[in-house]
Image (cartoon, rainbow, N blue to C red; front, top):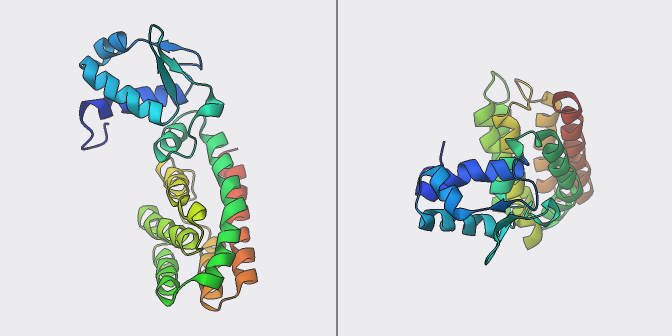
Length: 233
């Protein structure tokens, strides 16, 4: 299904993007815009717009007299939320989930320590509210509601760290958490121990205990990796 509001080029992207990230068009493949426009039954201008979006993600490059070439995977913008979404929808899902979770384990504990030192009273309150929202929706198979608060919690951890680089990873973390729920790489109810850890992180941040906030967040990411060992080996 095409993402609402993106029109015809969105419909093209919703098919062509996942096909590229899934390897249906291997690196070095030449895509002819005229042939693609005919295949998708869209105008060449619509096809060019779709190609421009793919170029912005570094998935393809256009060359005169050559066409549109699929770039090597090592050149893709793997932090682009849409690229993450496409890869999570394909056979690359286990590798992508693990790669993103390892990234989280390297970044989020440090961010939590900084947040404990720098968070404002309002940010502390927001973090606590998110944690309590996770508790409230952690039983009864309410994963979508739980996800909303989980994503918000981790966004606060990253943004309140005072590091703009960490803050920009909020969308990346949101995509991996959302992807786990969307593709059912989650238990029917979240691990109670993990839920409790989030509450404890919020408490450590409020108490300005940077060492404890960092350690507890590290336990969260280690637990996430252990879940993947079971659910997406």
